[in-house]
Image (cartoon, rainbow over all chains, first blue to last red; front, side, top):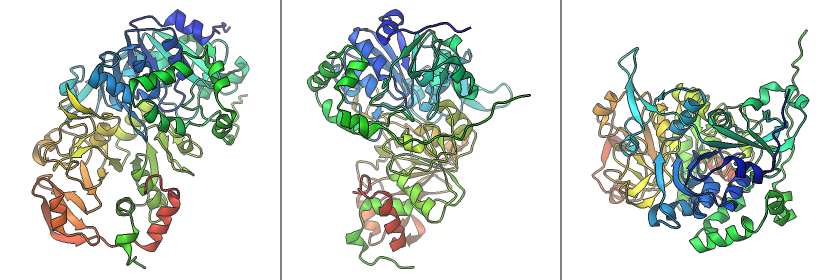
Length: 305
Length: 260
């Protein structure tokens, strides 16, 4: 039996995200839940610890809006473009407030989530040794193998207070189908203490059960389901809308100064009630430009005797 | 094979570096590609001598076949028609740590004579003059890949005797100590610039010039490097790009996003 966990993004953020929480908005370039970030900004949450491998534009916005006390990350750039200017302004000039950082490599941070999701006290891995990062982050340690003389690096588990994961389709109780770049969505959902799933489409449970290999997240780790089309823009959702590369390039100009950044936020975050109003503001020419060609997979049979 | 005679005026430094880097890739190798210049080098090699090249991206896309230039390593065009997609943790655990990647491309703000790369900070970590993006997967790649290739413009601010921060270890402070660290990767293999190709002394792990790009003198290379560079006993000159290499490359980036 499934249970209905449907609510709006406003309700989900209001119910699950508290001041001072650690939060993970999942998605490696793909399906980054911008609508959740914008709602957290509108509800003026503060002193958050923001967790993400790539802070991306979504955390740049939350940092500019003053939501963040600390950032835990592994690559703080605007992919393919350059810097995240709001992150740098906060770190280098304390604008709008100082920012603590805790830094890993991609393997280190994704390993932390994996350790959190699988309830391990630490995770060994072959990286970090020889780099200067462990000297700046005391949570990166080494351990000698109990089976040989090998020494490997370790990272501690990561269990966010709240994880938000955007998916292509889910049923009302949170069983979620994901395809394309699947990044750290599954790990974040299993590691999170509270989990909000947002989706492009709500489908019947029978659609989920017709293709169980595609269900990366089962309903019993999910606390809220939000039907939020275009949740990920300017990031993308494979098969639904493409990445708005133009926006990623323009962000560099938009964020030249704190004031220019806040002007954008006044219009596109504070100036709208929710994602559907945000999409009403979006020029239809842009929507057309981001609409992908179809490329269907060949159906498979899950039949049994 | 036709070599281009007018190359010094015709070919941009980026085009030259991509062509020289592409020649380092062999058929059937598995290469971990970044966006931009490395992506072009891998795609060029795939169209020429290495049709069976496996292109793997940090984002978990394996065996990609992009029909346009991706802006980021998580671009949707890397997914359409790929061989496989895995999670981020699986990418690093199965492919990199599993020892499945032959060649990796890295870049950074600074590189030093032992091939250590800095993509983290200029200045000190606690009070940086410039905060750069950080390692991302670069340190993981440097620690686990067979051959690391760096493509970079040859500028004094990029080549430094000692990097401000080792984001990705090269041979650290020399090959003797590096081999005690037990990293499974082969370490830095080649540094390709607009002036020369450098490899690493097999004994000491120090960078040394092995080939000069067409028309470049060793004096010019030294002028643009702040430490006294080692030079290989037999210094070669890089064969000029062929017409086929150049036309194929230009067809990959027709609007000159990366080749400008």
